[in-house]
Length: 202
View 1 (spheres, rainbow, N blue to C red):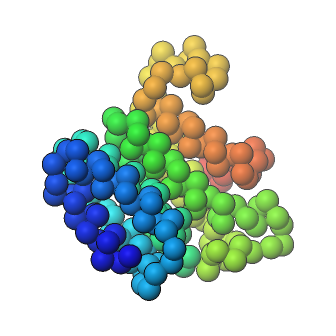
View 2 (view 1 turned 45 degrees about the vertical axis):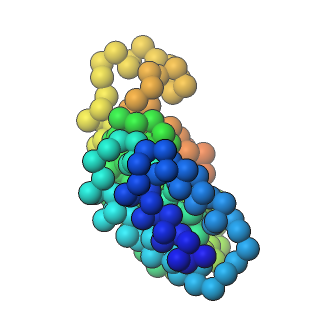
């Protein structure tokens, strides 16, 4: 399994367009295959090195293949002690013009949102999937909120005023950012987001 995944990602990064695409789709099948020795260690290593692997990719189609492959295994490679480790990378992906890449980034953010909001949804409890305190989770969520609202301000256009619903917004980075923030709101609630706004001084 370990060698197979490493080979698939090498193919994604180096092969022609069709072969790279097929390798990216094969990653999902390998990830969900029966457990083999070192599977989780290899997945965690690949996910952790994703920003490094991505930065040297120039073709958009290869970027898409790489990010989609990372996203299907992301849930097995999260860092319980540092759940926001890849947030800068994911925010970079959220600014990409390719909607499939942005959607994959949203899915990866959502995987982290569950444990990070556990103490909000179930007061007094701590997620078994996190090694950070509720207070640290709150700080991570606040940092996320600051970054995403800054990005929304960067990509906002005056014509967006006429749209009442997120679903009505034109496809693009701003809509994806709004969708991402709404996913967080669905988990932690409007009142929690209001607290974040107040903390920021909005």
